[in-house]
Length: 406
Image 1: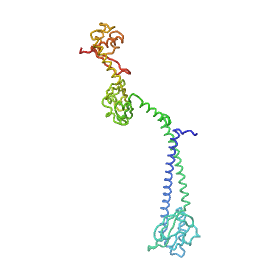
Image 2: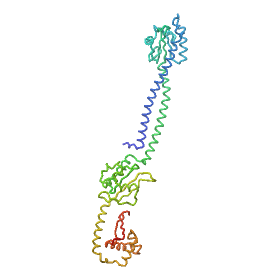
Image 3: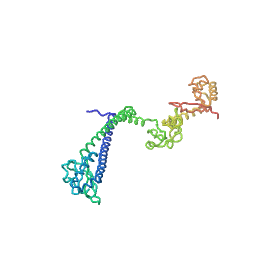
Image 4: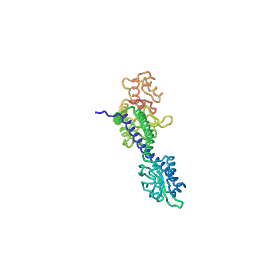
């Protein structure tokens, strides 16, 4: 079984076929126009020659001579040779020739119908005479009183016309071949550029990558929204649509400012590497963004949304349990805690507007674990306020501050 053509071969073949068809069509049209132009140029020349002969006083006066051909034949031959035509034939109203390239034909009747020029009209067309098929012009010869006394017919053989056309056509074919070759080389260059743009991947590889990306993107539990420089959403996965309580197809191409809401759009525009908590409907989300402005110019940006709703509920339940424990232990220290150390921790916390267990441990010179136990006791007894820090990566951290209302 023959192997399937690569993308490079397919692109090259298709482009080469297009170049060939366009070049061929152009060549056919150009050839037809060239033949028409050639015939028109000969027609103009033949008509001018025929009318010049018909208007020569010498030719018209010779019609009254006893032997008109003696005067007309030399003039007609000189004009024929000078004009590079096949024949110049002058005949009277009865169709009897007074001139012909073959002198033996003089005195014979013309072989084609002279009715149109004898009726005072000019004839242009192809007819077959004694010399063969020719492209010809016939004009009437008028006497001084305006009556038609004869005809002047000039023409060129179709074979000679075709020979000249074929000589011109050779140049046209050469130009067509050169254009086709340049087109093929251009197609090869375009193919190379396209393949570099797609990292030399084949169609089946591209399809597999797109399929895998779609599967991975829509299977993520984290919401992903991509916005272009114009502020339009270009990509949104199922998780993000669920967080926003919208349909993914509805969000695709929508204006980000109108569908994301003020808080999320602020995160998107300003950029947020660490993550910022945002409440969207019933969801508590941590939003991160690459930012959509660079040096004051809007650029493409990606917004990542992580759902912390369940974690937030757990923290609230833990805080409620801690409050109950604090109520029970309000008038006594738990086992293992020192009143002196507790005062030192409370004093250190009072000097800081917001602190972690690590920072208080360093101030009081105790371990982080011990500092955390004292801070939790202060929070449980209402002397300190506990808050969650969502700016940390992974699990939120805990920070404390003194409760000045106690």
